[in-house]
Amino acid sequence: MKALHLKIAPGTLALALGFAFAAAVAARAEAPEGFVYLAPEQVPFKSPLGAGPQQAVIFGDPSKPGVYVVRVHFPPGFHSSPHFHSQDRHATVIKGVWWNGTGEELDFSKARPIAAGSYVRHPAGGIHWDGAGDEEVIVQITGVGPVETTPVGKPDAGRDDHWPKPK
Image 1 (tube, one colour):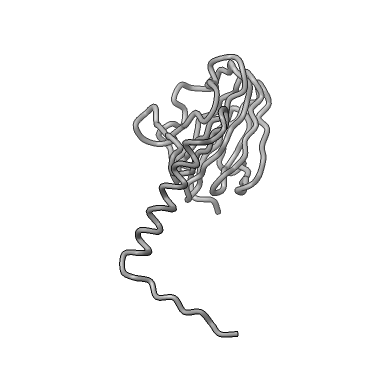
Image 2: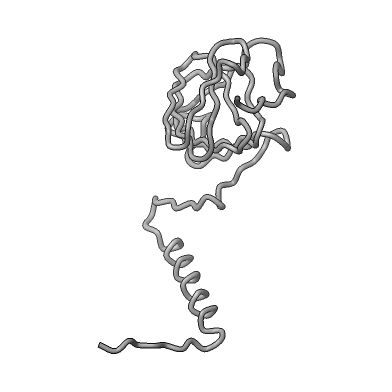
């Protein structure tokens, strides 16, 4: 059997890629009603403080009744202070190693590394703190609202501290 050799004219590849992109956009626009497709680069992360951890509401609204899905992005070295939630929260690590600790004391030596792909349940009322070590972390959290977050300990405890690099 003879091999078939094709010559591609200059610009043809760019044109073909353009058509493929247009088809992908059209396919997204024509998704059946109620379906949502969101690529990682389309996640609308926002930081309430202008720096540090960012959050994106993917589905629902944590302040209203019903299921919600949020993603949290922790830049390297950033973490939360001890706190608890009024409802159970279910977290899946999407990227990086998420460091978790429990209790009112922010003690980095007691933090537990949670690898990408892992699941964590934070029970309602369970005091915890979490964040990133020396790499960025993205965590997806699912829960049922309305949910409230209550800080524990001194206001802003540890807010200016960076997570030490894990040893």
